[in-house]
Length: 198
Image (tube, rainbow, N blue to C red; front, top):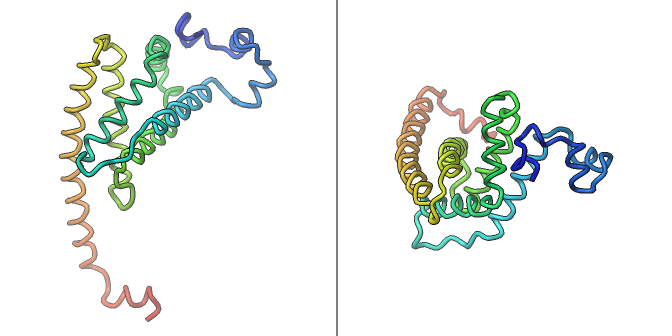
């Protein structure tokens, strides 16, 4: 409410205490700084989206499942869009403060992929998380300005970027596999047996 009314600058702990009726002492037990509030918000949205997610079905492609998870996330954030619009605008001018949200933002994308049943082991896991984070960041900006009832612009942007990302990931994983095979050719003979103690 404070962010929607007065922007991110209006979100101060004394103002939160006055608006919520929670003492500053209790707020201090939960939060260290203002960005902790956003991290807690991200975690709450993660939990809400995961609670609404349905088990993956064989008929759905991985891209379709990720699409559903991200759109469910935007749906969950809709009541907070006015506040998020103003917070996002403020953080764009304060990159150091925004950078503090990178770990929790990557964690959010990890959980979106986990909820979609995506593969999250092996060398491609980090690429998937980072790739989805990049896609989400761009589509989030579209969503903030998308006031159409069906979020047509958001869905079109997400679908296009997921398709491009899927193609890029396939090429990147293929390159990684080729490099690993190439690198293994330089390993001393018998190194695998020595590692196993044979």
